[in-house]
Length: 325
Image 1 (cartoon, rainbow, N blue to C red):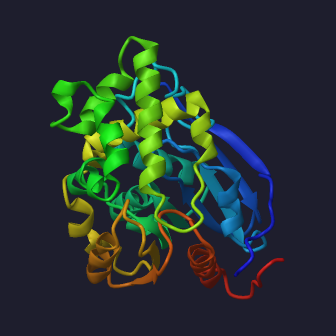
Image 2 (image 1 turned 30 degrees about the vertical axis):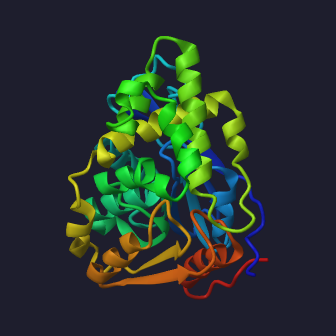
């Protein structure tokens, strides 16, 4: 097993006004003169926790963490029911990333993303290929309508009892329609008890469908009612709009990634985002390497997935840098 890099603290941080009443939190860690690298967290809505800093050699990289709109330390907080999500779109997140790049005086950066962060990283790189030096992606998703339907309905064939509970939490008349739409409506209900039940059941299902790898433990963040509501609101907001992307657009636009080296790491037991998504992308992205990890699932669920991500960021270090211990 490759050791993660040691814990570090940011040397700079701030709140960037991105318009629409939103201010996004950013921080920089590691070497101020190192190679710039941006982290795009998953969710949507999970925020960029400290563990992301440890995926890069701090002696070699200027590591930039960003909490996307409405989550983490960004404001306003989507956990507040009155916070509008109308301006929380992929197009605006891409604009936020570019605004932050210019704010920090960065010409181009390596972009690392996991899960939803992969969708956002691909959308950003296809829109602004000149701003991206490399891509390191794990738990590859494209947030297509097919993927949303897979997670919210078809996966009931794998976890029938748990899915029945997930389905039955919505009103009976809505159970045969779009479950993500039904949950989004409940999460916007004026009754706080309805919102809380929807958030709890959504996050309970999230914990189930990522549980395919040995040693899975429930995500402790779901014990926090504000995190549950924030996360569930943002996930359902983006999923009901299929990531605010034309269906299949990321795969069709992958030719724009030509010349950008990339590594995609994906667990074979990841049924939240089946491996065919990454495989199809690898067929049309000429500079990508696909690393499939047997016995591991979604996220950094095991040592081999983490090792592969660390190996990728080590590979893209500037020449002359050695791994810090």
